[in-house]
Length: 456
Image 1 (cartoon, one colour):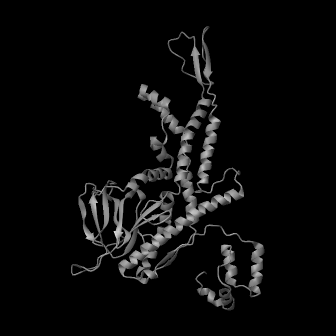
Image 2 (cartoon, rainbow, N blue to C red):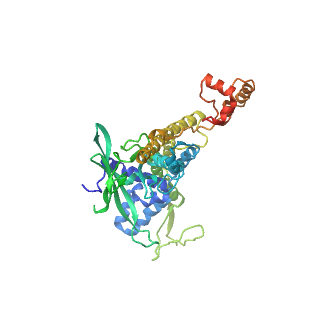
Image 3 (cartoon, rainbow, N blue to C red):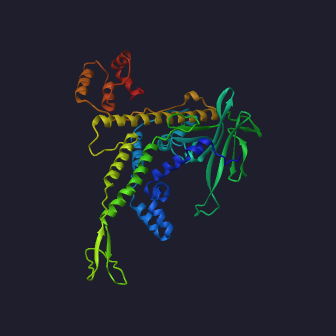
């Protein structure tokens, strides 16, 4: 086996990730691959007779329409996620990570948004923790398709990650204007209980020599090394190395099926609006080639003409099938989409609740992955992992304020029955805070303490 060897689960799920890439890229990417729109048998036979007949399929594909449900759905989801505010606690030596946490210099909050987006679209966010040449820790995330291999084994009686391989792309040559790249593979592996890393070329040639990761060298002696791989495979349901399901995959498949149906639908409409003329009984050497309302034909005494009308009996059935695919996409629970007023309020609420449940799991999973990564960094730099906190409350519902209840709460505040803080939280969140009677009584008696309240 070589460094390019891939995990069986990687091979099984790669087509899904590639489909999601194309679905998110949009119509141009979908139409660029003929596999998404098979050629009808008639066009296949026509091309066998002459390669010049390829225009038939080109027209068939050009008339097809790909709906951007997946891209719009992801944007809608990220719009809801963008309202969430992470709660972050870091030790003094790691405070800088709050604003500079990624290998390209973005904040922990931006890292959270990136990881949620990829978890929604691909169900997998391979993440590596590392320290740069200046001694600053950072997160590096990879595309799902670039985490090519991994392996777990029993370490000290427990299942642990012992191998992780990532495909990377580096600039080739020194031309600043060139975009030529070369592929390399970064390897993390556990040897004798210590994490090592190296970089190899596609051919297996060592580009960066194997070294212990997480070392503190003193006089050339290794003083410390990580006893784990600083790798987290954040997923859509958990953070185990196994591949999770892709939340938007059902919608992508529905969008592609609708694209295929639309090719037949719009081609049928095209044929219906452009009937085929026929002429017989002419003795001219040059056949008539001009049609249209401005063209006049001289058929002579024996000539006759007519049109081969395309009835389009199946057009309505195809249109209904396209609507079914749109309904299937809606049922995937991945996008808030209107259906021309035919969806009841209860059905819409149920669909949104399903979407929120999916997002709820993803948000919690991503937050836990980031917190785990921060704990890895704390251990790496000698800080206490107990002082780390990165949490996000996945509350997506828009607050609904009842004026009558708000008025009653205001009267209760003025009567000294509830605290002003509880009233304010109802106005902001649409609900009262979860606290005991005694905790609420303390707030009523000591309103000045609210300035230091964690929930403010």
